[in-house]
Amino acid sequence: MTGILEISEEDIKSFEECKRYTIAFAECGELGVPLARLFANAGFKVICANSNPHVLKQLNRVRRRVLEDEDSQTSENEKMEKSFEVTSSVREAASAGEIVVISVETAIDGKGRPNYSPLERTCKEVGMGLNRGSLVLFVTQTGPGIIEDNMCSILESTSGFEAGRDFGLASSPMKVMSEKNLDTTRVIGAIDEASLNTARLIFSKVQSEIVEVTNIRTVEALSLFMEAKKEANLAMTNEFAKICERLKIDFLEILKAAERSHAFSLPSPGLIADSIRRNSQMLLQESENADLSPRLMLIARKINDEIVSQIFRLIKEALKVCGKTVRSAKVSVIGISQMPNCKVTPGAPRMKLVSLLRKKVKTVHVYDPFFSKKELVELGFESEDFSRTMEGTDCLIILVGHSRFERLNLKRAKFLAKKSPALIDVPHIIDPLKARKYGFVYRSLGSGYAR
Image 1 (spheres, one colour):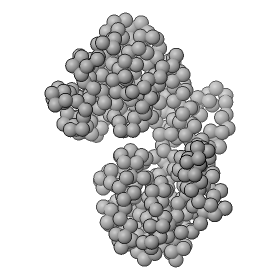
Image 2: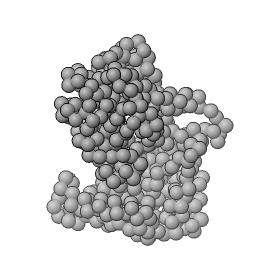
Image 3: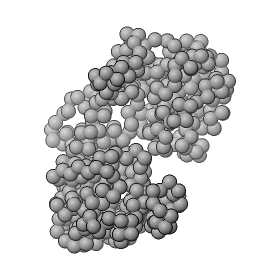
Image 4: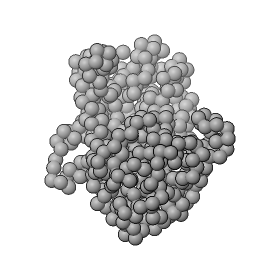
């Protein structure tokens, strides 16, 4: 093999030298954009392709921000020379890139099984545009063996090339959707030494620490094990929170004391992120295909599914203390994104909670500063600006810990709300004493006493 697969550290040691190489992102969306921006800021020519017209418009907005980015670490001359192109053709992008990054998120179908059809279609388009000597780099989460056994075959049959001889193949799954939150350590697996070396060198331009493993299956499994561990940890903390509520113990105080004493570290109780659920579901599916039934994972899934009912119970109890009924209540949900301080489409648990509220209460309004009113309406929510969302509310529910919610003006919120409102603080970002001072009936997961 020739081309990018023979690259050395000297070949990309400066911004100017990186400009000689093009990185194409196939079906680039929320998953690929953060990485694309980092590579553009490092000097690489970047092409982001997406066949969806709506996503293409968003990519063009990203392109303008990249080329005008005042926060970039590059010099003024380098900023002017940055290259970030957008196209609707995955095939053309693949043909122009020495490295093709496949960043299609794996969907989960209605039966809870991974749906690799979008990934397969993308591989077909990439294969038809692939050049000899290119590196195909997957950053999407996949089940162990999916890339080598399925996607590689599609790339080979559509391109007419052989992986490991005519083109390189590597994988380094992404687990976050914002470049500000990218993991500092990146794990890479590849089909051969040349692919591994090229992926390592390219990623070394944007991330500080690289860990290499022997093959793609290993990195696929490691990535899914990490996500399954997150789900198990959340299940444990949700169980502890339920115990503390019954025993009238403040679980948040336990978490803080445990962290200070280095006894253990667990996440705060709450709703599971859809990305964690989706990725652990891939592992469950591959385990089922191997005639295995991972009991701990299945129990963790059941516990985390029950947290929606637990949050609703807190709402019901808080409204009762306020002297109000669930059926006649106006409820305001603020923060619907899956991740704090960025816009990530709400997943199944959040949608399920809002759906449950619609069936049980009089009115449900949703507000999130990272989504426009139009976007929230398109997601199926009733939405207004913050003041109108809060106006006359009986119960304020905070679902995600955006920084601006930590600075929430409780005095103003109480003024807009009805008399004796409830406040359900799912991410635990509001001081309970302060909330009570301004007249809210405060509840959070793991709080074992009325405040």
